[in-house]
Length: 226
Image 1 (cartoon, rainbow, N blue to C red):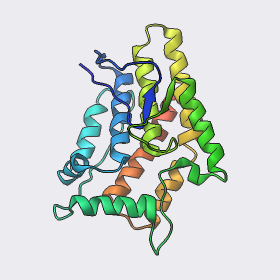
Image 2 (spheres, rainbow, N blue to C red; image 1 turned 45 degrees about the vertical axis):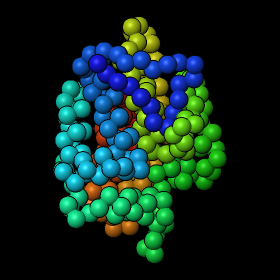
Image 3 (spheres, helix red, strand yellow; image 1 turned 30 degrees about the vertical axis):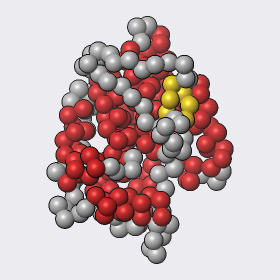
């Protein structure tokens, strides 16, 4: 039984039910996007524990077993001496605060454009078109990387659960469009800015893995890659 939830987004007028999903390449993509969204959200105790045991790459690889393309998630962990508080502080330094060596490598896509308000409006229109809205219980900016990865998870779920080949193709085109317009343009710059801040290796691995997977998945879907 697959238990589905969205972080940062709500489905208007619809209750999410537990469901049986087939094991195939589409649900493998769903699982990877779900794990990446969790990885790039503010780390809680569970995220810290998994990082300390080196379990994040293993978790991603498990979800990815049926992908239609090969992908190596590598290895990543944190030293056992790194407390949850230190782990969270590094996340904040890198992605929200910055330091003397440079500004934060923002996880908000709008920070990489000349007009964040316009970027937010565009991504919100994507969500609203598919019946989604910002979550009141889990408020997070619409252009936060974790929220956008959650949206990709939602679109892959809709593809996986659509009985009609026409609808399946429609949801796949939506994924191509969202990747091309909202994720591909700014993730390489996120990686560069994170690297410039001399990150804890784990967080450098996390953003690089997200960028690499998005680009590989987009290419497999046929989205243009610059």
